[in-house]
Length: 341
Image (cartoon, rainbow, N blue to C red; front, side):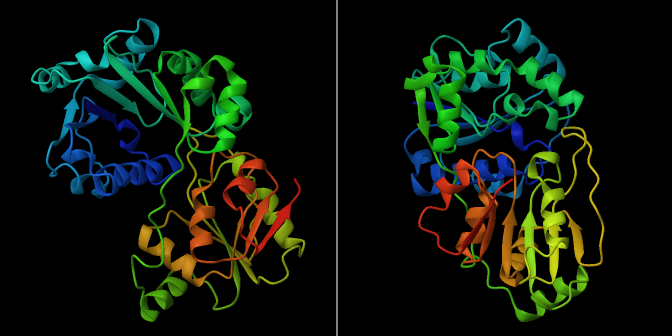
């Protein structure tokens, strides 16, 4: 079977949960399962302009039977036509059509983050669903994003799918609640997290540099990392920290950046004991997991929670909101505190 993998979510998406999921998905496909040695795989992107992709893509496009196809239809035009008219069929776009012409095999089209993606009848479409936050909590998003989610027509995309991957049992149950007719299509495929303390051995000098760079005193601190947006409930974490609910920690370090094009605007309280680092690199993220004395996430809603799995790999004490998916991913982990929202 020929696989076309839609990696459009990597086009300028930074390091949010979806790109991290995609990195793990491709690692499992190419390195663990070695499917590139068994059948052709096409990584597909689309933009009228040149695109800068994450470095890990370079590791895969040189593998046997793997190629990168960049079609150059303006994305706004492509999305409008695909959503409203269900044309063009993605596999019939010129660049993909030319590559597929030499194969008589079945074709699977894997959409790693839902978006309008009609395909030919002979193509089996698989869609990865990370969460249903736009449906469950639309007020957390900007007006532009709300319009995009309406335009996406998620239920239609899921109905057209041959297979649906949910990132957790919780997300699986959410999809079934959305439309019970999808029940037999759904498979849970947990994220593969590649960030752990065995990948990079950080020197004491580097760890000290991180503390100095972000002006963090060498005292116990509570760490959290996410996009700074309303669903993450960071304002409650700040309030509880300043109220003394977490007395073991002298500082609260919050990493991540805002994206007000997608999420609703929000302001956070400032205090000398609260340190906002902004965006941090992967190596800096490793350093923070090494340096932190605990990890917190008081999110209202998640489809999974990759930073929590990373914190568990570093054996950090956890402070988590008492929501179902966090119970699912922390099963058997003892050093945690549940917070009722």
